[in-house]
Length: 362
Image (tube, rainbow, N blue to C red; front, side, top):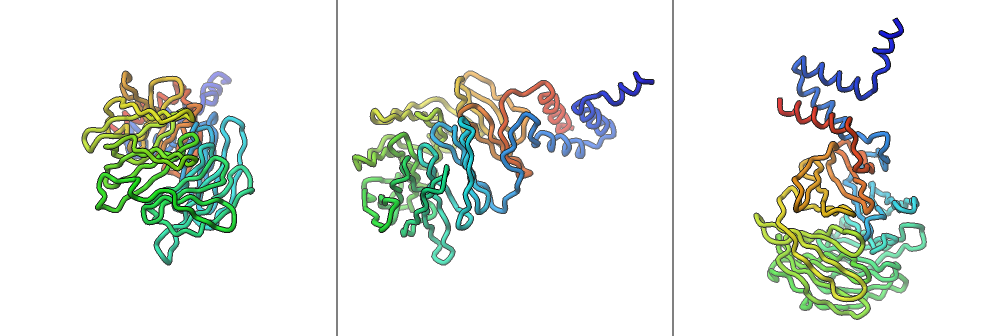
């Protein structure tokens, strides 16, 4: 009697779940089985770190420091800061729901962009993230299609007005200074409305200039007030940081994409290397720290890939996926959860994934 009782009640939760799915399959209830498996693959595991189970009204903005060891995200009128290596975290309330966010190189400061409903333009507020030491509102009205930036110490911000680059100290009184005229930062198609997107690269900045899938890349050194064109034929103006001294982006043209790496340091001009051809599934490349492999998300799936590695789907479903500097997935699910997950998937995880693929093929 005890043996039978133990057989019924000593099963693991994993075994019980698999049996329930198998019963649904036997009953040909494939849609219900698929929904149960999908929910399981979207849910954080016990060993994962849940960052938020809130479902914000607006889309989260998620950004990293250059080394991807500091994570910042927004949820409506709140911004969250987490130092993944030191274990520190903080949060601040915001004036309104931000439309964009640009971090300093060390992620200690942020340039927050808000939409101005009356004019249709945007305004900037510089804030500190580890504490409340900085709150500075710029008087400039900027185009919402551009992206400004901020120094690592939060002392100055940079932004574009009428395609000209301005510098502004984050102290009163407001005194914007024209640094570079638009003739210095040319788009591949000057007759189209140009977008300018700035990203910190060590002690300097990278600026994408262009539109419609064609961008030039400039290197801007704020202390010397110089700018230099360093690359062209860039498809997407999104930068994916690597180890703190490198980043990746997509070059080429529609139908012929290739990955490029830019190495930057305080010693001099960044060095760009053209790597290899990539597919549409690989256009958001997050580099693993110790391997020549990348992690990307596509159509809700997460996969590992590399120049000498066949693409491998991982047993997790994320609506959006990012990778930290210590190789943890930042997973935002369709249900709205945000969590951190290591890449140490267990046999049980893979068995759930195998079941999911089998059921979906029915």
